[in-house]
Length: 417
Image (cartoon, rainbow, N blue to C red):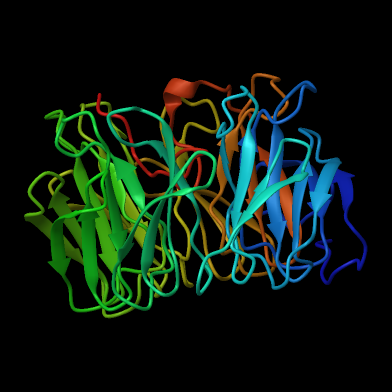
């Protein structure tokens, strides 16, 4: 029987818990129960010296970051937040000590910067706060030093040195978007560009010095974070961004020219975009969902391959990879109904897993405990993080889009092949 409600305690782990599984669904390896809804997507990283990889989530109204072991046991928590926490943590070695740091964007406390033990390193104030976005970390600039980026609700794009000091700040449109910046080299000059949406219908590309390179004016806000990827294998990156009136843009990353668009409906698009080469032909397909529950797979040229009706609002990016070991790529996407769907590369339903409450986070694919099998991590608004297994062997070459913004640094930049 699927547990509902909240325990009111820090959390609990249940191994091989009973849940409302549809026929053909994966097995539940373990669950972790916290005390409120989970909006954040799971982040899997080697944070401690213990075997396996740790898992980071945030518990919304508990105002807590939770670090779990590969078996779902609490390693540490940090709960010194003024308001609820909904952002997905960013993990990067910002200190140059070969140990990861954790950066959490917040509504009122700025950027909360933690070490690998969950101890506070520093707080960076952010005027207006960041409601839903994340910190993006990249090696921006010719000097290749780690650089941090974010956009506030007041529309300020900040670039920060690895120690948190300000490099530059660019005033974009107010209010700022829900999504995070995408960071990557768009013109092949060795320096990264920063692409960020605006809350009033603009998409901006800035160079590594904070000067605007190009701007696109849409007819609705670009709330979901943009993605940088070479779709057609020409060694040049495109930019993908979706607006709240149901329009997906594919843009020449260098010039800012619109290459193609895809229309869903007049409904909003909150889903982050994902890409992956399903058929190994060298070109990457594009995946995203909308507020009506329609999920789309497009070719690199914007033609519709297939669509799937998830029946309810899709808020998050899918995860893409072979999770059951049959050699073909699977697409996993969560819906507002609380259902995690596993689709074949042709868009047909393979299985579904019911949580009973809204799913707003992206699934994450990993091998947490290093047993050689794919772990599927999916949180729900019932306060539970599920670790599932469909029995597939872990093969990094078959994991095309493992987590919400593609990588731990949340840069949403897929390397050119």
